[in-house]
Length: 170
Image (cartoon, rainbow, N blue to C red; front, side, top):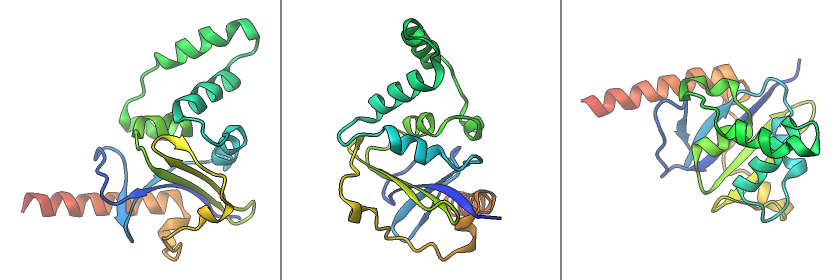
């Protein structure tokens, strides 16, 4: 059985809501994303074009994913924008919606799959930047066992978050 996980990396100086499982390691904020189908990043990578904003990618993805005919595209998009998903329910939303809710200006998404290969998404100032193939070099080493499993990563996140909360209360 192959191992896979999707991780979102940002600069460690960024603070995010504690309802979102995350931890800090080797200079990065790391947020795991559940990706049971293993294709969320690959699917987005296919529609992302250099210079597209996160909002443009979101709009394009929702229109493509949820519309069956040309006349319904606007209605479907508007209905979807009105949906509300609580932060506690983040495991049930699409990756693009998750990225929009995080509202990070600069980040990288890595989808590691030891069978299908790796996929990357890079954003700077909310704009997709993936033209340089050497840009995909990660500064973090994938040498920790929890980095290869969403549930292992989530448990590590929760332990780290509890430790930070305890240190803050001291």
